[in-house]
Image 1: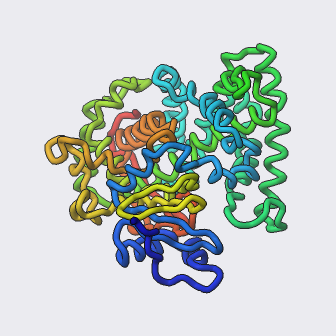
Image 2: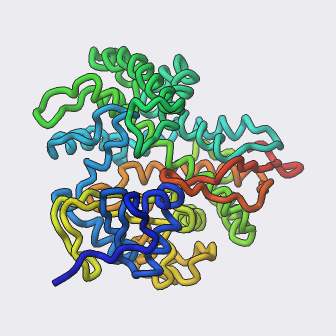
Length: 448
């Protein structure tokens, strides 16, 4: 009879592995994998969690239904940030909320939004001038958040409230917290709670105007959310609708910004791989052919492989968490109901069997010549999988391709600090601290 997964070394009395986990979850999980193989367990205070690190085992777990491995209880950390969204007690209400976000990411909607997204990216690149520096972290955060606000809330809203919305929203995002109570008097949590209240107050008139039919075409995806219904077929209450709009903004920018920062870092760290990508960009997207069509972006095969390799080496998702509702088996072990299940992309993505020489930046590992069955791509966990695969993965891919392509088409760039380190704490992983990039347009180059 299968037994529960073995406990990772280093558990402390009472606290278990919690101090190590919240300090550096990747180091803890990698140590557990080396001690016990692809499936083991950790103790986080009174809670036990199975940790699944093998590529095959991870995909097996992600394919399990919500009735076995539930994501809704895990979303409790969102409540202090966005209210009672994506954590409904009834499965049908959770599905209704998720369905309300789906239209934002369906193919035609993505393609329809490419032109305004391209205009924003063109405007940002043009604002850089012929030479200078930008910090990859705040620059990508500002750009992707501005794009998210335009897509979700509309260009008119951004023109009226963009600066204030951005300031408040970043205060909310900085208040991500997994342990402390919502009203704990920590300064960043106080700022988060104050900013959340102000954001809801700011968006309620926009929601009511959308429901009254006032210029729905100018209100972005908020108009779609305003017309959506809950599991009983009634319109979402106002707090839920506003919370869905805010969480859509968050999902549309947070991980995209961090992944773009890492893409710039890794490409600039590897000039041998960068040179053919820049040549491909100039060939596929010659100067003057703007706005860039979606079809052209999808022809950037070398850039696409580089983005996959960036997601493999520096996945911004540190840990995926599920709540075990029914006992299941994985890797020869039985995971009991009541436990959690953790998956760790930074560890899984360095499995040497699936990714030989895993520490090397090697985009061609994703080429059809070396991986005709697509196993390398299928092993990536950055966008989760199964019924909870990231809704915005295709839009994020197009956005990242466009930002990188326009930068590479116009500038020569270099890292001021050649070796930025990753953040280690729980949450999205981005380069730690400042990450300045120096750029210049080659002498005699046309303005593009």
